[in-house]
Amino acid sequence: MMQEALEDYIWLVGEEGRRWLAKVAEDTRPTLRILESLRKDLSAARAHLIVEQVELRRKAEEKFPWADQMFFTRKGLEQATDAWIGHYKVRRFSPGTLVADLCCGIGGDLLSLGTRGPIVGVEKDSVCELFARHNLAVIRGTNTDVGFSQVIGGDVWEYRHQLSEVWGWHIDPDRRSVGKRTTRLSLSSPPPEVIEQLLAIHPTAAVKISPGEEVPSEWQARAELEWISFRGRCRQQVVWFGALAESPGKCRATLLCDCPDPQEVQAESICGSAGMPTPIASEIGPVVCDPDPAVLASGLLGELCQRFGLQALAPQGGYLTGSAPPPTRLVSSYWVEEVLPLDVEKLKRYFRARGIGELVMKKRSGEVDPEHLRARLSLRGTERAHLIVCKHKNRFRAIVVRPV
Image (cartoon, rainbow, N blue to C red):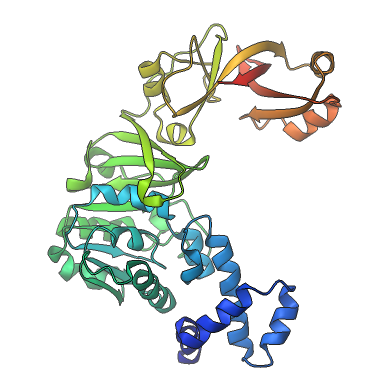
């Protein structure tokens, strides 16, 4: 990066930049009008940085309760772990010990790790390094009880000689190092070979990767793989090594429950062996269940069925059935009210007879377009219904359900 450009970012986090950010955050005019106004006092580059930063802070509010005090790059925000997942993950790290966060970006995981003890962040991007340092200082504030904190610039390989000084380390490999987002770990930076060398130096580590990334077989044998879902989506996969692995060789699916304070986030998990056979239901029972995305991503559907006495409606498709709602938040449960064929005319008559004008539809198959089906049903009425469209015995079924 050109020194002139870096100086603009340094200006942005400084007192003058923060004053402009506070002013623009209150401005409700269209973006172009704001830019025109800013250009009377600022360079084009600095005016753009102010407007962009205000936009990014607004987008970041769903990830960080204190987003209005933080600094982001667009890529850094996209890849950052949100505060709820971060505070859940940090519970595995020994309190009060020095921990390193490699490839820390703008500081998503770094901020959570910094609440439990001393922390060192390592980041090679100079702007992200600057922002991570500022973000960490803002969040820690005057709380010196948690100990030493530092963000240093450089490649993670350059930090290998200091790894022996930490209790454990966390890394979030760059998944956009080839110019576009990738789900192939081999294309991440650093690649698995470098991470393996770091593990040889210090085996207690957490590697954050995308939910769909395939982990090397040698990692699967000695690490614990965890898929974490939050707010209806599977957000990330974490490969836990060494002292951080509670169940080496196993997979875990974890659902985080939303709450106002990230530090109070509650979790429910299932841990077991991936790929267990999933029993197939001969009939649709009184209850249909929709598994959490983390369960599906982790391959623990069979484990879930065995534990709670459930059966799958189809070999692929995800929906389960049982005699009663299972006592777990890892599925969304529904009472079955009617099972109908996926026939538009029959469905139309059924919904019109009951005054259904609003339909909440769930499906997993790409063969059914919910909006197209909704339009063909020509719904009229004031009542609301829930419909699950899925396959059972190789035929599409329309299951009218009621949330438990």
